[in-house]
Image (cartoon, rainbow, N blue to C red; front, side, top):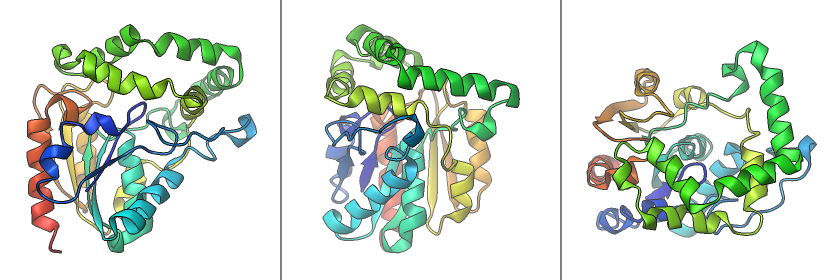
Length: 268
């Protein structure tokens, strides 16, 4: 299994999952390019935005990791925007690289240009430019990249605010202070293109399971249920009382869901 984090996350967001899932088979939590302790190449000027940090490149990274490091087809388990990277990997790698995908609260990508009201698109693009290309973005990041701010954001998206521990805050914040992290952060918040889950799901040649924390304020479960209609999706599991990051907030539920899915399909 390869475990894939969401925006602003890293491999340590799966620290409660790897010990348990590793009993089922070799399990790797990975830092996507630009996040955690992975390399963070400069994303370049506005004209080159999103050329490095995009789902196509992250999908290729996952496929390469499966083939070159794991050495056999893998199951990809994802959270949030990591789900788009996982689906992209399954699309380009096919069954020879990916045996199945598990999505937890996959990002609906509501800032995608196709989902923005037409009248708001110039405003959104202008704001993205200001944040990415002026000192305002660095100032914004400096305010966000503090323990208190990180804790407040996580408490908003977790179903149980008490689940946001100091250990979790440190896991998220520490690699976010690595050199180059601010430029990666600002480049991604200007990312309004690329594939959507609803575009990738019809192209899947492998089974997909979707789990959703019903108390997620960022990715409403009512919209997430629409993904259950795609042929490749064999089940949609509701996680009561859980927010945007089920793998950390409710690992006992997530680990069992993933374990059953893997055992069901690993001999395929």
